[in-house]
Every structure is written in C-alpha cells, then in structure tokens.
Length: 133
Image 1: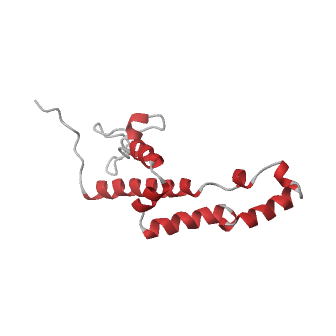
Image 2: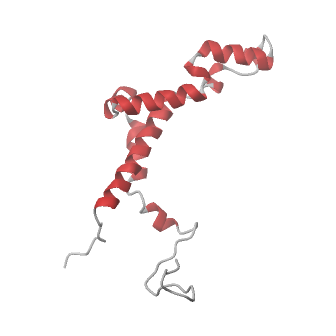
Image 3: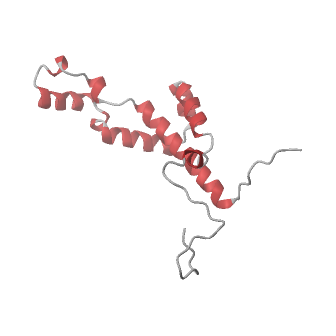
C-alpha cells in the first residue's frame, strides 16, 4: 500500500501485503466460519429456524423465491413443460430445478456471521494471542 506522504510511491517498511494466494491471512478474516458452517449444516431445520431472526427468515425466503420460480412447484412444472415438452419428467425433475430452501437459510446465517466479525473489528482491536509463560 502506498503512503500518502511519500512522493516516490514507495512502500512503508512495516506494511504487510496480501495476495490472492495468501490463504492463511484470508482464513483469519472470519475466524470460525468453517466451524460455524459445519455446525449449522448438522442442525435440524427446526433448530436452524430457531437461530434466525424474522428478518433473516424473510430475506432467505425472498432470495429463494426469486431464484426458484417464486417458490411454486406449479410454476416450475409449467416452465419445464415449456422447455422440454409434455414429457419433461422423463428428462428432469422439479427437485433438480428447485434448490432446497435450507441452503438459503444457512447462507444468510453465514453472511450474518461475517457481518458480526466485521462489526467487531470496526469497534475493537483484536490483539494476537500471546503464549502464557
């Protein structure tokens, strides 16, 4: 990163540079995201819904409906008939063309998890863990 007071455009000595392949630094951006994702993927749909606020549920449902024929299997079937003809069911199925809403619930919870870490970093400085001696 270039300093604003540096007329020559040189890097500061104490500056760290991230690259796309710097995997370890990217993983630290959202600690515990993998563990959180693993946890919510193992929960029943009822428990998953208990974790969500009403706003999160509405947001997830809205995205799901926007991407899945308004959430209507009848609309999906109608579109499949238009695309593949009256014997569409021999080529594909409704399940293959409509995503599971659970994936959207998990996605919204992951987004919220990231947002909480972003907010946390904005308000406080997280110091590196130090080894106790």
